[in-house]
Each structure stands twice: as C-alpha cells, then as structure tokens.
Length: 262
Length: 234
Image (cartoon, rainbow over all chains, first blue to last red; front, side, top):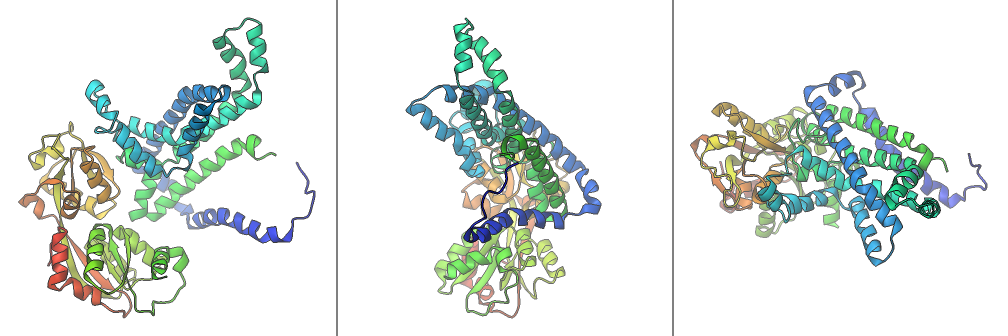
C-alpha cells in the first residue's frame, strides 16, 4: 500500500470527484433499475440461455484466436524494430479506438461474400463467414486482439532478452528458447492478455451485429440480445446488463495484481 | 443554436426535467424509415423543424424519459397505442402514411429467387427484422399467414441494416418495407399476398403545440413527397 504523501491541491479535488462520478453514476443507475426479484427467471429464459451459449463459444473462440495469432505477433513486435514495426503497432492498436461498427463494416467489405477476400473464400473453399458463428468469432477477435497483443508485447519487452541470449549461448535453438525460456517468463502476462481479450470479446456488439448479424443460437450474443430486448423488454435487458457487468468486474478483480496494485 | 438544441433534445438524460417547448420551433419525432422524407420536407418548406429520428419504440422510450417533442409519428399502431397507454401523447391525429412488406433481392439476384416460397429454402441467405421491431413483427405475422417457415440467417435490429446487407449482396433476399427497397434501389418481389401486410404510421400531438407539420403531410404536396419515397397515403 502506498501512503498519501501530500495533500491534494484544491483545484484538483472537484474535477477528480466529477471524473469518478462520470464513471460510477451509470453503474449505480443500472443497478437501481435492475429487477432483482426476477433476475434469475429473466436470465434463464430460452433466448437468454441461447445467447449465453453463443457468447461463451464466441468469446472463448476469440480468446483462443488471440493466443494462436496474437502471441507470435506480440513476439515479432517486441523483438523487432524499425519503421514498419512502428506502423504495425499503430495498426494493431486501431481496433481499440475504432468504432466497432466501422470494424464490422470493414470486415464485411473484406471477408463478406462480395468482399475483397471473402469472394475467394466463397468461390474456392465454399466458406461464407457473415451470418455464421465463425463470423462472430472473427468479429470478436478483431476487437479483442489489441488487448492481448499489447499486454503480452509490453511483458516481452520488460522481460528483456538477457535470458534468451543466455539460452542461445548454451546452444538452445530459437524455438527451444521461445518454448522453454520466453513462454515461462511471460506466463502471467499471457494469462492477463487472455482474460482481457476474452472479456472484450464477451462484450462485443457493434462489429458482431454488423458483420455476423443476429440469429438466436447462432450469432445472437448476450450484448446483441440486450440491445434487442431494450426494444420490448427493458427489464430483461437490464438483467443481462447486470450479468455482463458482474463478469467484467470479476475479470478486473482477477487481474488486480497487474493493474490495481501500484 | 437551434441545431444544438435539437441535438440535446435527442438526449433524454439532459432534457429530463425541462418544461415544455415555448419557442416557435416544432420538434417532431419520426421513425427511421422516415429519414429521407425529413430531408424532402425541409427542402419543400420554410418552417424549421427539429427532427428526432430513431426506431419507433426507442422514440417512445425517449418520451418516457422526459424528452421534449410536439409530435410523435410511429411505424406501427401498436407502438403508438403503447405511447397512448402510458399517457405520453395527447391527441391522436390519424394515419399519415402506410408502408408494406416486399421481398427485396440482392443485386443480380444471386439466389435465383423468383417466388415468395423461396424464403423457406435453407440454402439461401435470407434476412428478416428481429421480432422486437415493427418490421419483424409484420414479417412473423406474414410467415404465419402464408404457413411458411422462413429460413432466416439473420434477424436484424433495424430494417435499414437489413436492406443494407441485401444491397451489399451479403444476403440473397429479405423481407423489408417498400420504402427501404426503394431507398436502396433493390429489385423486389411484390405481389398480392405480400401487399396485405401493410403497416400504418399514426401521428399524435403532444401538448397543444402547432400541428402544421401534420397538416402539411395531408396536402397534395406532402402526399407527393411520401409517395415519391415509396409510402402509401391514406
């Protein structure tokens, strides 16, 4: 624990409180509207259970894709330098700030049936991604990947190359060094990256509905179900929101060792 | 400043608590399918109107959360009835326009759709609106009447989003409103069995504000605008 070393300057106090309120007020608003007495009923309807199943498949699939593709990408970015890498770093961060609906539209134009690459996926392999669970995984991966890559990349940089160089001096090949030295050293960052990217994928809405559409049991995830429920059944929408909020908080509490204990 | 005021009026949180509009600007809430009509009306008239455009049920939610408006237009009678039951509107003004379902086809008709029954073929990529929004309710009702099991690959949250995906060729076809098919220049299958699935756009006044906008829509000029955008007029 750190101790307060100086008194907070007065001009900072009021804006700081307002800043905290901007973040906290919406959560309080949500919780006070939650239908606590019927929460379990509302979260166990067929539609919501279907959405939970789709959300689990899609978010775990996306986290898996982040591990398989993001880990090598993070390694390349951490161990290389140059202008190309600097540009790549900006591109990797882009989905974090891009409106997800823009990402979904871009995915549609790239991987849709009439898209730049999607046309060949369709013609050569008979694969059409839009309106499939796989398409929802692709959309979720697009928005979740930066969270994984940046977490792991910074850990790889912090770990440095001393151990890897020592291993190489002792005769270990690049792959053996990666598996036996680099991976164990960044294990906790990989875990944190997985948890963060999973949570982001679970909350994905804009890119998913734009690229993969919305069909119960196939592409209708919990956030999409929430959005639709708002039209006719706001209380159920709030119930699902409370569930997603609880999961998000759980993930952050799980990761508190990395970000909250400074 | 007026534009700013209009933008703020769309944010229910900010305007909640404000009293009724005392100025001369009329605020009109219209459903998303009226988007193109609003630009046409602005061009045709000198009067400044603040438009609030959103899905019908969202408009009602905004009113409930305290948004300020003089007139409400919804894309179906059900949503308007809901607003009336909650006491959010004061005087019913009648039906302004009608819209109907059509089966819109992707450019070039990649699915080779030539009759209504094709929407039950699982091999095709078919879209409808989600049952939570008016166009989806209408599609569900139609499917039940035709005894057709629509092989939907997506149930979109708005008719515009659905029409866009058909226009982009990502879907082979889907049930949209005639106005949306027209807006995206889509070829349609439009027969008697479809035409019976019509939706009415009722208007209602809020408070005792001016209803000149409503009156305009019933003039021949107003009806012309509606017809040009694919609406039916009562």
